[in-house]
Length: 188
Image (cartoon, rainbow, N blue to C red; front, side, top):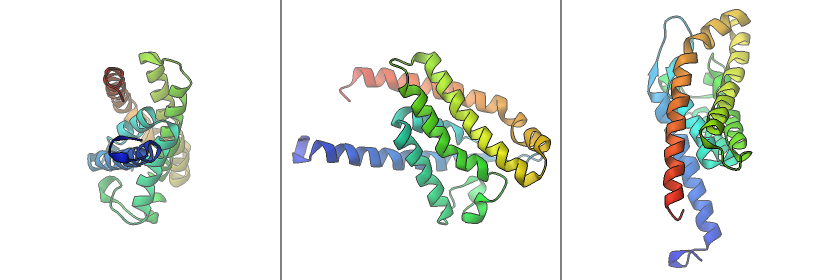
């Protein structure tokens, strides 16, 4: 039993549920920091950071669940997408593939990290790069359909974002490393 007579298994489930909700909210916050770019239908956002951290810190399943909750919130009509977008129609727009990729990216990030006994910075970098690749693969595939031109999709949906996404991965590695040091010093 946990303190207060709360069954430990139930306490862990509540903790996981709150973490899933928290990362869904962080992804929404990342969408709020959104910059429309004149040369692409895809805005620049900070969403990649919480998506990858969700998988790294919550694990594959809970990380993916946080992103599924984020997507379901937006499809249900909450204005959680970039530029306050909402509704199922938003998912059919140019960024729909990237959004779908969030679920897979969190899962892949968590899975890659789980494959290491002690991932370290190199393992974290590999996991975050793999997760980022999932986002871009899904996003570019849908954007190519949306635009009708794979070359144009690559120019509009990948090239403008590579350096910015790599910078977010560097930040994610730092946050992950700090959280692992903190976790090692606590009883959690």
